[in-house]
Image 1 (cartoon, rainbow, N blue to C red):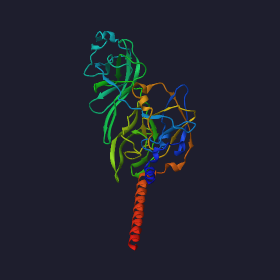
Image 2 (image 1 turned 90 degrees about the vertical axis):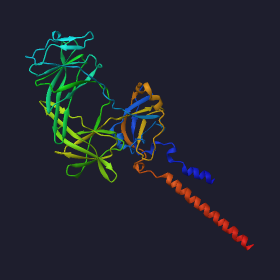
Image 3 (image 1 turned 180 degrees about the horizontal axis):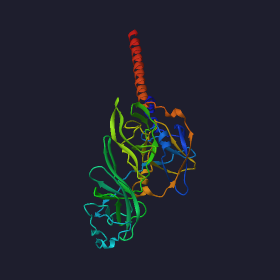
Image 4 (image 1 turned 180 degrees about the vertical axis):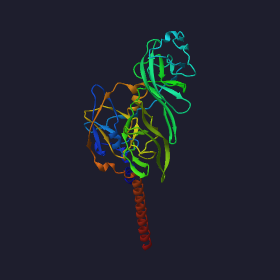
Amino acid sequence: MIFVLLLALLIPVSAFAVSPMDFAGGFVLEAGPGHSLQRLELPFAVYNASARADLGDVRVFNAAGEEVPMHLRRVAAEPVPAVSLPLFRLGPVRGSGDVDFRLQVRTSERGAVVETLVRPSAGESRMILLDATAAPSGLGALRFGLGGGDTMLRVAVRGSDDLATWRDAGGGVLARMEHPGGRILQDRVELSGRAWKYYLLSADQDLSGLESALGEAGTGQAVRRFVPLAGAVVESGTYEYALPAGLPVDLLDLGGDEDSVVGVEVFTPSGDGWRSAARGTLFRLTVDGQRLAGPGLPLRGTLPRLRVAMQGTPEPLRAGWLPHELVFMAQGAGPYTLAVGNPGVQPGKDLLAPMLAGGRADAPMGRAVLGEWRSLGGEGRLKPPLEYTKIALWAVLGLGVALLGAMAWHLARGMDGAGRA
């Protein structure tokens, strides 16, 4: 009997099944029609309600309060495929009419550009022809190597499949500027519309500072989400911010809409102090009516607390992340509940992971809709969990001491009785 009691004391609480009332609250979850598997992009509200950095307290229950299989996966930021594009420099063209490249460009049997007969004059190049015949279909952007000193170019891009008829394909500002607080670099031009075999880059200035060109394939990636940061002043120019523990922040950028250039350094907790985690320049400028925005400052890991020191006029900031996707099985009657908020609940067994492995990850699924928040177990579920293992060990130790005391007492009584006899 004592042995059974000891085993019961050592069983962790997480081994027992959980119910919706084990969580602080949850969101109503409506499943889309026609599919057993449902998907939902986790909004900021779910991250904010979670009490665990690993989101281990996220669960889905049906209307009967039964837990249903679910899986959390990151919508990964896959590297954007890029290919080097052959670059041909052309001279300035007089007038505003189109250039008839059919008589000035020689191509191979496959359509690749072999040479151009239009040469830059006096060492100046205001037009560049890019050969994208070997690039993957659906280029989404052009990226350039900017050499030399400070550069600021407004460029236009046109596309063609026959080197005769050209259509607008995009445009933007290319910039490279060094300043005491860091560097401003904008080396990417977004493309719009369909893909073309050839691209013609033109500007009102010399383009000889463009040393190379890459074509980036269209991404189709998940959209990065942002949340504005509200912080407290630690000291002059330094602010501290708090974020949900499970929010996978990977980017710091300027908030608001005003033009600004700010040097920033990010610090994260380290022991009793703070250590530098990243530094760079955040910028947003308007040049000839064209918005020039920086890529932001990449960050790593979860950042429940961070400090940001700003060089220059302090500006509002925002944090960006690529969200998780929740996949669950619409098992049993709805509506369903996405329950969250219990630091003591351990991650459940992932029964859907094998089903979603390999090529089945993109299988057709319904689109679930997240509804209103409602209280379940209440705020008390957010308290730090009791350390049941320690309690059990102390209980076992106390029970052992009590048993030893009882044995010693019985032994002493026996010896006393024997002595009297």
